[in-house]
Amino acid sequence: MSQRTLIFNAIPLTLAKTALAPGLHQILIENGRIAAIGVNLGVTDAQTIDAEGGIVMPGMIDTHRHTWQSILRAQLGDGTLYDYMAKLRFGYAPHFTAADAELGNYAGAMDALNAGVTTVVDHSHLVATPQHADALVTGLEHAGIRAVFCYGMADVADAGKPLEAARPFTTSWRYQDAERLRKERLSPADGLIRFGIAGSEFLFAPLPYTVKEVQLARHLDAHRFSVHVANGPFARGTRYVTRLLDNGLVDDRTLFVHGNVLTREDLSRIRAVGASLSVTPESEMQMGMGTPVWPLAREAGVACGLGADIVSGGSGDLFTQMRLALVAGRLAANDRLGARRIMPETLTLTADDALRAVTIEGARVAGLEREVGSLEVGKRADLILVRTNGANMAPVLDPVKAVVMQAGVADIEMVMVEGRVVKSRGRLVNCDEPALALKLQRAAERIVQATHDQELADAYTLVRAAFPLDAGSAFAARFAGWALRMPGLDRMVFNMMLKQADAAQKSARLTKA
Image (cartoon, rainbow, N blue to C red; front, side, top):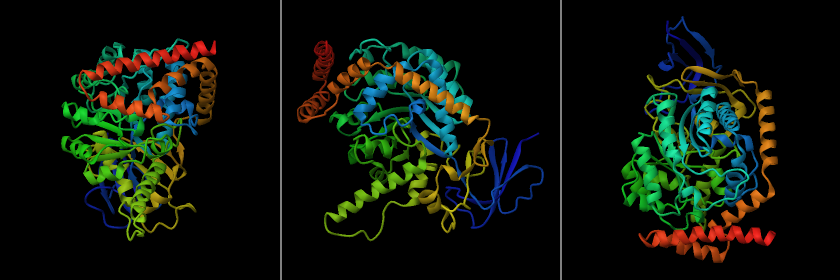
Protein backbone atom coordinates (compact mmCIF):
# COMPACT_ATOMS: atom_id res chain seq x y z
CA MET A 1 0.00 0.00 0.00
CA SER A 2 1.34 3.41 -0.97
CA GLN A 3 2.29 6.05 1.60
CA ARG A 4 0.19 9.17 1.04
CA THR A 5 0.28 12.53 2.78
CA LEU A 6 -2.00 15.46 2.03
CA ILE A 7 -0.97 18.98 2.95
CA PHE A 8 -3.92 21.38 2.90
CA ASN A 9 -4.60 25.07 3.58
CA ALA A 10 -1.21 25.91 2.04
CA ILE A 11 0.11 28.96 0.22
CA PRO A 12 2.39 27.27 -2.33
CA LEU A 13 5.57 28.89 -3.62
CA THR A 14 6.28 26.39 -6.37
CA LEU A 15 9.27 28.11 -8.05
CA ALA A 16 8.04 26.35 -11.18
CA LYS A 17 7.71 28.06 -14.57
CA THR A 18 3.92 27.94 -14.41
CA ALA A 19 2.51 29.70 -11.34
CA LEU A 20 -0.58 28.50 -9.50
CA ALA A 21 -3.66 30.62 -9.04
CA PRO A 22 -3.65 32.60 -5.75
CA GLY A 23 -5.32 31.04 -2.73
CA LEU A 24 -5.00 28.04 -0.45
CA HIS A 25 -4.03 24.77 -2.07
CA GLN A 26 -3.53 21.10 -1.37
CA ILE A 27 -0.38 19.10 -2.08
CA LEU A 28 -0.49 15.32 -2.29
CA ILE A 29 2.69 13.34 -1.60
CA GLU A 30 2.82 9.70 -2.58
CA ASN A 31 5.78 7.35 -2.14
CA GLY A 32 8.18 10.23 -1.60
CA ARG A 33 7.14 12.27 -4.62
CA ILE A 34 4.69 15.08 -5.32
CA ALA A 35 1.65 13.42 -6.85
CA ALA A 36 -0.70 16.39 -7.29
CA ILE A 37 -1.20 20.08 -6.48
CA GLY A 38 -4.61 21.70 -6.58
CA VAL A 39 -7.39 23.53 -4.77
CA ASN A 40 -9.44 20.45 -3.92
CA LEU A 41 -7.87 17.11 -4.77
CA GLY A 42 -10.70 15.04 -3.30
CA VAL A 43 -8.28 12.82 -1.35
CA THR A 44 -9.75 11.12 1.70
CA ASP A 45 -7.36 8.21 2.36
CA ALA A 46 -4.13 10.00 3.24
CA GLN A 47 -2.42 11.29 6.35
CA THR A 48 -3.01 15.01 6.61
CA ILE A 49 -0.97 18.08 7.54
CA ASP A 50 -2.85 21.35 8.07
CA ALA A 51 -0.60 24.18 6.85
CA GLU A 52 -2.96 26.72 8.49
CA GLY A 53 -2.33 29.28 5.77
CA GLY A 54 1.46 28.87 5.94
CA ILE A 55 3.82 29.02 2.98
CA VAL A 56 4.85 25.66 1.51
CA MET A 57 7.92 25.87 -0.70
CA PRO A 58 10.77 23.67 -1.92
CA GLY A 59 13.39 22.73 0.64
CA MET A 60 16.40 25.00 0.30
CA ILE A 61 19.62 23.79 -1.31
CA ASP A 62 22.99 24.73 0.19
CA THR A 63 25.50 24.45 -2.63
CA HIS A 64 28.63 24.67 -0.47
CA ARG A 65 29.02 23.63 3.17
CA HIS A 66 31.84 22.10 5.21
CA THR A 67 29.35 20.19 7.32
CA TRP A 68 31.87 18.65 9.72
CA GLN A 69 32.72 22.03 11.22
CA SER A 70 29.55 22.15 13.32
CA ILE A 71 31.70 20.90 16.21
CA LEU A 72 33.67 24.17 16.11
CA ARG A 73 30.71 26.50 15.80
CA ALA A 74 31.66 30.22 15.83
CA GLN A 75 35.35 29.60 16.61
CA LEU A 76 36.24 31.78 13.62
CA GLY A 77 33.62 34.44 14.33
CA ASP A 78 36.37 37.08 14.23
CA GLY A 79 38.66 35.22 11.84
CA THR A 80 40.05 35.89 8.39
CA LEU A 81 40.80 33.28 5.74
CA TYR A 82 44.37 33.35 7.10
CA ASP A 83 43.09 32.44 10.57
CA TYR A 84 40.77 29.82 9.14
CA MET A 85 43.49 27.96 7.28
CA ALA A 86 45.99 28.11 10.15
CA LYS A 87 43.81 27.66 13.19
CA LEU A 88 41.02 25.42 11.97
CA ARG A 89 42.37 23.47 9.00
CA PHE A 90 45.94 22.93 10.26
CA GLY A 91 45.39 23.37 13.99
CA TYR A 92 42.10 21.80 15.09
CA ALA A 93 41.23 19.46 12.20
CA PRO A 94 44.06 16.96 12.85
CA HIS A 95 42.58 16.26 16.30
CA PHE A 96 39.22 15.07 14.93
CA THR A 97 38.72 11.35 15.43
CA ALA A 98 36.50 9.37 13.07
CA ALA A 99 33.77 9.53 15.74
CA ASP A 100 34.14 13.33 15.80
CA ALA A 101 33.77 13.38 12.02
CA GLU A 102 30.52 11.43 12.21
CA LEU A 103 29.20 13.64 15.01
CA GLY A 104 30.14 16.80 13.15
CA ASN A 105 28.42 15.74 9.95
CA TYR A 106 25.33 14.49 11.76
CA ALA A 107 24.98 17.67 13.82
CA GLY A 108 25.73 19.86 10.81
CA ALA A 109 23.10 18.09 8.73
CA MET A 110 20.52 18.40 11.52
CA ASP A 111 21.35 22.09 11.79
CA ALA A 112 20.69 22.43 8.06
CA LEU A 113 17.41 20.51 8.21
CA ASN A 114 16.25 22.58 11.15
CA ALA A 115 16.82 25.69 9.01
CA GLY A 116 14.80 24.34 6.08
CA VAL A 117 17.82 23.17 4.06
CA THR A 118 16.96 19.75 2.65
CA THR A 119 19.99 19.34 0.37
CA VAL A 120 23.66 20.13 0.98
CA VAL A 121 26.68 19.90 -1.26
CA ASP A 122 29.10 18.76 1.42
CA HIS A 123 32.65 19.76 0.49
CA SER A 124 34.12 17.36 3.00
CA HIS A 125 37.84 18.00 3.48
CA LEU A 126 38.26 16.12 6.78
CA VAL A 127 39.25 12.78 5.23
CA ALA A 128 42.21 12.08 7.52
CA THR A 129 41.79 8.29 7.16
CA PRO A 130 39.44 5.91 5.34
CA GLN A 131 37.60 5.57 8.66
CA HIS A 132 36.97 9.32 8.63
CA ALA A 133 35.52 9.08 5.12
CA ASP A 134 33.07 6.38 6.16
CA ALA A 135 32.14 8.25 9.33
CA LEU A 136 31.39 11.45 7.43
CA VAL A 137 28.99 9.60 5.13
CA THR A 138 27.38 7.82 8.09
CA GLY A 139 26.69 11.16 9.79
CA LEU A 140 24.77 12.39 6.75
CA GLU A 141 22.89 9.10 6.45
CA HIS A 142 21.75 9.15 10.07
CA ALA A 143 20.48 12.71 9.69
CA GLY A 144 18.39 11.78 6.64
CA ILE A 145 19.38 14.80 4.56
CA ARG A 146 19.79 14.80 0.80
CA ALA A 147 23.41 15.46 -0.07
CA VAL A 148 26.18 15.44 -2.60
CA PHE A 149 29.07 14.12 -0.53
CA CYS A 150 32.22 15.49 -2.11
CA TYR A 151 35.10 13.32 -0.93
CA GLY A 152 37.87 15.69 0.16
CA MET A 153 41.19 15.13 -1.60
CA ALA A 154 42.92 17.79 0.52
CA ASP A 155 45.53 16.61 3.00
CA VAL A 156 44.83 16.57 6.74
CA ALA A 157 47.93 16.94 8.91
CA ASP A 158 48.83 14.46 11.65
CA ALA A 159 48.24 15.72 15.17
CA GLY A 160 51.43 16.52 17.05
CA LYS A 161 53.74 16.10 14.05
CA PRO A 162 55.62 18.86 12.18
CA LEU A 163 53.83 20.26 9.15
CA GLU A 164 55.34 19.52 5.74
CA ALA A 165 54.67 21.99 2.95
CA ALA A 166 55.12 19.34 0.26
CA ARG A 167 52.93 16.66 1.86
CA PRO A 168 49.59 17.78 0.33
CA PHE A 169 51.18 17.34 -3.09
CA THR A 170 52.66 13.88 -2.51
CA THR A 171 49.89 11.97 -0.69
CA SER A 172 48.07 9.52 -3.00
CA TRP A 173 46.12 7.04 -0.85
CA ARG A 174 42.89 9.05 -1.16
CA TYR A 175 42.67 8.17 -4.86
CA GLN A 176 42.19 4.50 -4.04
CA ASP A 177 40.01 5.20 -1.02
CA ALA A 178 37.67 7.47 -2.97
CA GLU A 179 37.15 4.62 -5.42
CA ARG A 180 36.50 2.26 -2.51
CA LEU A 181 33.91 4.60 -0.95
CA ARG A 182 32.24 5.16 -4.30
CA LYS A 183 31.85 1.42 -4.83
CA GLU A 184 30.97 0.34 -1.30
CA ARG A 185 28.88 3.21 0.04
CA LEU A 186 27.72 5.56 -2.71
CA SER A 187 27.23 3.52 -5.84
CA PRO A 188 23.55 4.34 -6.56
CA ALA A 189 23.14 7.08 -9.16
CA ASP A 190 19.80 8.14 -7.68
CA GLY A 191 20.35 7.68 -3.95
CA LEU A 192 19.67 10.21 -1.22
CA ILE A 193 23.43 10.81 -1.04
CA ARG A 194 25.41 11.18 -4.28
CA PHE A 195 29.16 10.81 -4.68
CA GLY A 196 31.34 13.76 -5.58
CA ILE A 197 34.95 14.88 -5.35
CA ALA A 198 36.19 17.94 -3.44
CA GLY A 199 39.37 19.14 -5.07
CA SER A 200 42.48 20.17 -3.15
CA GLU A 201 43.55 23.80 -2.83
CA PHE A 202 45.83 23.54 -5.85
CA LEU A 203 45.08 26.97 -7.32
CA PHE A 204 48.67 28.04 -6.61
CA ALA A 205 50.34 24.85 -7.81
CA PRO A 206 51.28 23.59 -11.27
CA LEU A 207 48.25 22.33 -13.15
CA PRO A 208 49.20 18.60 -13.29
CA TYR A 209 48.23 18.24 -9.63
CA THR A 210 44.66 19.25 -10.46
CA VAL A 211 44.61 17.18 -13.64
CA LYS A 212 44.93 13.96 -11.59
CA GLU A 213 41.95 14.89 -9.42
CA VAL A 214 39.77 15.86 -12.39
CA GLN A 215 40.66 12.57 -14.07
CA LEU A 216 39.71 10.69 -10.90
CA ALA A 217 36.36 12.49 -10.72
CA ARG A 218 35.61 11.57 -14.32
CA HIS A 219 36.78 7.98 -13.86
CA LEU A 220 34.49 7.56 -10.84
CA ASP A 221 31.59 9.34 -12.59
CA ALA A 222 31.43 11.86 -9.75
CA HIS A 223 28.18 13.77 -9.58
CA ARG A 224 30.11 16.99 -8.89
CA PHE A 225 33.73 18.11 -8.80
CA SER A 226 33.71 20.92 -6.24
CA VAL A 227 36.73 23.22 -6.05
CA HIS A 228 37.59 26.53 -4.36
CA VAL A 229 38.71 29.17 -6.88
CA ALA A 230 39.43 32.87 -7.36
CA ASN A 231 38.88 33.77 -3.71
CA GLY A 232 40.33 37.27 -3.72
CA PRO A 233 44.02 38.03 -3.02
CA PHE A 234 44.55 34.39 -2.00
CA ALA A 235 44.14 33.48 -5.68
CA ARG A 236 47.45 35.32 -6.34
CA GLY A 237 46.49 36.15 -9.89
CA THR A 238 47.18 32.56 -10.97
CA ARG A 239 44.18 32.62 -13.33
CA TYR A 240 43.50 29.07 -12.15
CA VAL A 241 40.05 28.86 -13.71
CA THR A 242 41.34 30.18 -17.03
CA ARG A 243 44.04 27.50 -17.03
CA LEU A 244 41.47 24.81 -16.23
CA LEU A 245 39.25 25.99 -19.06
CA ASP A 246 42.14 26.23 -21.52
CA ASN A 247 43.08 22.61 -20.80
CA GLY A 248 39.61 21.07 -21.10
CA LEU A 249 39.36 20.36 -17.38
CA VAL A 250 35.95 21.98 -16.87
CA ASP A 251 32.62 20.41 -17.78
CA ASP A 252 28.99 20.43 -16.68
CA ARG A 253 29.85 18.61 -13.43
CA THR A 254 32.37 21.21 -12.31
CA LEU A 255 31.24 23.29 -9.34
CA PHE A 256 33.39 26.35 -8.72
CA VAL A 257 33.20 27.84 -5.23
CA HIS A 258 33.58 31.55 -4.33
CA GLY A 259 35.01 32.98 -7.58
CA ASN A 260 35.19 36.56 -6.27
CA VAL A 261 37.77 37.71 -8.82
CA LEU A 262 36.51 35.78 -11.83
CA THR A 263 36.45 37.94 -14.95
CA ARG A 264 33.46 38.42 -17.21
CA GLU A 265 35.30 36.35 -19.81
CA ASP A 266 35.80 33.54 -17.27
CA LEU A 267 32.10 33.61 -16.39
CA SER A 268 31.10 33.53 -20.05
CA ARG A 269 33.28 30.49 -20.65
CA ILE A 270 31.98 28.79 -17.49
CA ARG A 271 28.44 29.24 -18.79
CA ALA A 272 29.40 27.93 -22.22
CA VAL A 273 30.64 24.59 -20.85
CA GLY A 274 27.71 24.26 -18.43
CA ALA A 275 29.74 24.48 -15.21
CA SER A 276 28.22 26.12 -12.13
CA LEU A 277 29.15 28.35 -9.22
CA SER A 278 28.46 28.54 -5.50
CA VAL A 279 28.76 31.86 -3.68
CA THR A 280 28.99 32.07 0.12
CA PRO A 281 28.34 35.75 0.96
CA GLU A 282 28.95 35.75 4.70
CA SER A 283 32.32 33.99 4.76
CA GLU A 284 33.57 35.73 1.62
CA MET A 285 32.87 39.24 2.89
CA GLN A 286 34.21 38.53 6.38
CA MET A 287 37.34 36.66 5.45
CA GLY A 288 38.75 39.02 2.83
CA MET A 289 37.85 37.12 -0.32
CA GLY A 290 36.04 40.08 -1.85
CA THR A 291 32.57 41.10 -2.99
CA PRO A 292 30.34 38.11 -3.85
CA VAL A 293 30.26 37.52 -7.61
CA TRP A 294 26.61 36.37 -7.63
CA PRO A 295 25.23 39.40 -9.55
CA LEU A 296 27.87 39.12 -12.28
CA ALA A 297 27.35 35.36 -12.54
CA ARG A 298 23.60 35.89 -12.99
CA GLU A 299 24.23 38.46 -15.72
CA ALA A 300 26.52 35.99 -17.48
CA GLY A 301 23.88 33.24 -17.30
CA VAL A 302 25.95 30.99 -15.02
CA ALA A 303 23.97 28.67 -12.74
CA CYS A 304 24.79 30.15 -9.35
CA GLY A 305 23.66 29.04 -5.90
CA LEU A 306 24.37 30.14 -2.35
CA GLY A 307 26.03 28.34 0.53
CA ALA A 308 26.58 28.72 4.26
CA ASP A 309 30.17 27.48 3.92
CA ILE A 310 31.34 27.33 7.56
CA VAL A 311 29.37 27.49 10.79
CA SER A 312 32.80 27.64 12.42
CA GLY A 313 32.60 31.24 11.30
CA GLY A 314 29.09 32.36 10.46
CA SER A 315 25.50 31.24 10.32
CA GLY A 316 24.20 27.92 9.07
CA ASP A 317 20.93 29.11 7.52
CA LEU A 318 20.24 30.32 4.00
CA PHE A 319 17.92 33.14 5.07
CA THR A 320 21.05 34.94 6.22
CA GLN A 321 22.91 34.15 3.00
CA MET A 322 20.01 35.34 0.83
CA ARG A 323 19.82 38.69 2.58
CA LEU A 324 23.60 39.18 2.57
CA ALA A 325 23.81 38.31 -1.13
CA LEU A 326 21.04 40.77 -1.90
CA VAL A 327 22.42 43.64 0.15
CA ALA A 328 25.99 43.11 -1.11
CA GLY A 329 24.85 43.08 -4.73
CA ARG A 330 22.60 46.08 -4.24
CA LEU A 331 25.32 48.01 -2.41
CA ALA A 332 27.82 47.42 -5.21
CA ALA A 333 25.32 48.53 -7.88
CA ASN A 334 24.19 51.56 -5.88
CA ASP A 335 27.77 52.60 -5.17
CA ARG A 336 28.55 52.59 -8.88
CA LEU A 337 25.69 55.04 -9.35
CA GLY A 338 26.66 56.99 -6.26
CA ALA A 339 30.15 57.56 -7.68
CA ARG A 340 28.37 59.52 -10.43
CA ARG A 341 26.16 61.28 -7.86
CA ILE A 342 23.09 59.37 -9.08
CA MET A 343 20.46 57.76 -6.87
CA PRO A 344 19.07 54.32 -7.86
CA GLU A 345 15.65 54.46 -9.49
CA THR A 346 15.15 50.68 -9.31
CA LEU A 347 16.91 47.66 -7.81
CA THR A 348 18.20 45.13 -10.29
CA LEU A 349 18.47 42.25 -7.82
CA THR A 350 15.11 41.12 -6.45
CA ALA A 351 13.83 38.97 -3.62
CA ASP A 352 12.67 36.48 -6.24
CA ASP A 353 16.25 36.20 -7.56
CA ALA A 354 17.48 35.40 -4.05
CA LEU A 355 14.80 32.79 -3.42
CA ARG A 356 15.57 31.07 -6.72
CA ALA A 357 19.27 30.97 -5.81
CA VAL A 358 18.51 28.70 -2.84
CA THR A 359 15.83 26.61 -4.58
CA ILE A 360 15.64 25.88 -8.29
CA GLU A 361 18.96 27.56 -9.18
CA GLY A 362 20.62 25.80 -6.27
CA ALA A 363 19.22 22.53 -7.60
CA ARG A 364 20.77 23.27 -11.00
CA VAL A 365 24.12 23.93 -9.34
CA ALA A 366 23.90 20.65 -7.42
CA GLY A 367 22.84 18.77 -10.56
CA LEU A 368 19.49 17.86 -9.03
CA GLU A 369 17.07 20.18 -10.84
CA ARG A 370 15.09 17.26 -12.28
CA GLU A 371 14.40 15.98 -8.78
CA VAL A 372 14.19 18.92 -6.36
CA GLY A 373 14.22 22.71 -6.20
CA SER A 374 10.61 23.35 -7.17
CA LEU A 375 7.16 21.99 -6.29
CA GLU A 376 6.09 20.10 -9.40
CA VAL A 377 4.26 16.84 -9.95
CA GLY A 378 6.76 13.98 -10.18
CA LYS A 379 9.53 15.67 -8.25
CA ARG A 380 10.85 14.43 -4.92
CA ALA A 381 8.84 15.67 -1.96
CA ASP A 382 11.57 17.81 -0.40
CA LEU A 383 9.63 20.75 1.00
CA ILE A 384 9.22 23.05 3.96
CA LEU A 385 6.34 24.82 5.68
CA VAL A 386 7.01 28.41 6.78
CA ARG A 387 4.73 29.63 9.54
CA THR A 388 3.15 33.00 8.74
CA ASN A 389 1.17 33.83 11.88
CA GLY A 390 4.11 35.13 13.94
CA ALA A 391 4.58 38.77 14.78
CA ASN A 392 7.65 38.90 12.53
CA MET A 393 5.79 37.52 9.49
CA ALA A 394 2.22 38.83 9.51
CA PRO A 395 0.69 40.21 7.40
CA VAL A 396 1.83 38.30 4.30
CA LEU A 397 1.01 40.40 1.25
CA ASP A 398 3.76 38.96 -0.96
CA PRO A 399 4.90 35.42 0.00
CA VAL A 400 8.24 35.68 -1.82
CA LYS A 401 9.26 38.91 -0.12
CA ALA A 402 7.96 37.61 3.21
CA VAL A 403 10.20 34.55 3.04
CA VAL A 404 13.31 36.32 1.79
CA MET A 405 13.17 39.52 3.83
CA GLN A 406 11.39 38.47 7.04
CA ALA A 407 11.57 34.73 7.72
CA GLY A 408 14.10 32.92 9.88
CA VAL A 409 14.86 29.49 11.29
CA ALA A 410 12.23 29.86 14.03
CA ASP A 411 9.53 30.18 11.35
CA ILE A 412 10.24 26.75 9.86
CA GLU A 413 7.28 24.73 11.10
CA MET A 414 7.78 21.54 9.10
CA VAL A 415 10.50 19.99 6.93
CA MET A 416 10.10 16.98 4.66
CA VAL A 417 12.75 15.03 2.75
CA GLU A 418 11.51 12.59 0.11
CA GLY A 419 8.10 12.52 1.79
CA ARG A 420 9.49 11.83 5.27
CA VAL A 421 8.85 14.47 7.93
CA VAL A 422 12.10 15.35 9.72
CA LYS A 423 10.83 18.48 11.50
CA SER A 424 7.30 18.86 12.83
CA ARG A 425 5.64 21.65 14.81
CA GLY A 426 8.92 23.51 14.91
CA ARG A 427 10.96 20.66 16.41
CA LEU A 428 13.32 18.14 14.85
CA VAL A 429 11.88 14.61 14.77
CA ASN A 430 13.87 11.76 16.36
CA CYS A 431 16.64 14.06 17.53
CA ASP A 432 17.45 14.54 21.21
CA GLU A 433 18.78 18.07 20.88
CA PRO A 434 19.96 18.51 24.50
CA ALA A 435 21.89 15.23 24.33
CA LEU A 436 23.36 16.20 20.96
CA ALA A 437 24.41 19.59 22.33
CA LEU A 438 26.21 17.91 25.24
CA LYS A 439 28.12 15.61 22.86
CA LEU A 440 29.14 18.57 20.73
CA GLN A 441 30.29 20.57 23.76
CA ARG A 442 32.46 17.73 25.04
CA ALA A 443 33.96 17.01 21.62
CA ALA A 444 34.70 20.67 20.96
CA GLU A 445 36.39 21.21 24.32
CA ARG A 446 38.51 18.08 23.89
CA ILE A 447 39.65 19.08 20.38
CA VAL A 448 40.53 22.65 21.35
CA GLN A 449 42.36 21.56 24.50
CA ALA A 450 44.31 18.90 22.58
CA THR A 451 45.62 21.48 20.10
CA HIS A 452 48.93 22.69 21.55
CA ASP A 453 50.29 26.21 21.19
CA GLN A 454 53.27 24.94 19.19
CA GLU A 455 50.96 23.28 16.65
CA LEU A 456 49.11 26.56 16.15
CA ALA A 457 52.37 28.50 15.92
CA ASP A 458 53.66 26.09 13.26
CA ALA A 459 50.37 26.34 11.37
CA TYR A 460 50.45 30.13 11.34
CA THR A 461 54.07 30.11 10.17
CA LEU A 462 53.29 27.73 7.31
CA VAL A 463 50.19 29.62 6.20
CA ARG A 464 51.96 32.99 6.48
CA ALA A 465 54.40 31.75 3.84
CA ALA A 466 51.47 31.17 1.47
CA PHE A 467 49.41 34.30 2.14
CA PRO A 468 49.99 37.82 0.78
CA LEU A 469 49.79 39.68 4.10
CA ASP A 470 51.90 42.78 3.42
CA ALA A 471 53.26 44.77 0.50
CA GLY A 472 56.32 42.58 0.10
CA SER A 473 54.49 39.26 0.18
CA ALA A 474 51.78 40.67 -2.09
CA PHE A 475 54.42 41.52 -4.71
CA ALA A 476 55.94 38.05 -4.36
CA ALA A 477 52.49 36.49 -4.70
CA ARG A 478 51.82 38.39 -7.92
CA PHE A 479 55.14 37.19 -9.33
CA ALA A 480 54.39 33.61 -8.27
CA GLY A 481 50.93 33.87 -9.79
CA TRP A 482 52.42 34.96 -13.11
CA ALA A 483 55.06 32.22 -12.98
CA LEU A 484 52.48 29.50 -12.30
CA ARG A 485 50.85 30.36 -15.63
CA MET A 486 54.09 29.52 -17.45
CA PRO A 487 54.70 25.80 -18.17
CA GLY A 488 58.22 24.90 -17.10
CA LEU A 489 58.70 27.98 -14.96
CA ASP A 490 55.72 26.94 -12.84
CA ARG A 491 57.48 23.87 -11.45
CA MET A 492 60.66 25.76 -10.59
CA VAL A 493 58.82 28.57 -8.77
CA PHE A 494 56.53 26.10 -7.02
CA ASN A 495 59.47 24.09 -5.65
CA MET A 496 61.03 27.32 -4.46
CA MET A 497 57.81 28.22 -2.65
CA LEU A 498 57.77 24.86 -0.85
CA LYS A 499 61.39 25.26 0.25
CA GLN A 500 60.67 28.77 1.55
CA ALA A 501 57.68 27.50 3.55
CA ASP A 502 59.74 24.74 5.18
CA ALA A 503 62.60 27.14 5.85
CA ALA A 504 60.23 29.61 7.51
CA GLN A 505 59.01 26.89 9.87
CA LYS A 506 62.51 25.80 10.83
CA SER A 507 63.55 29.40 11.41
CA ALA A 508 60.51 30.09 13.59
CA ARG A 509 61.18 27.03 15.74
CA LEU A 510 64.88 27.93 16.13
CA THR A 511 63.97 31.49 17.09
CA LYS A 512 61.56 30.26 19.73
CA ALA A 513 64.12 27.80 21.09
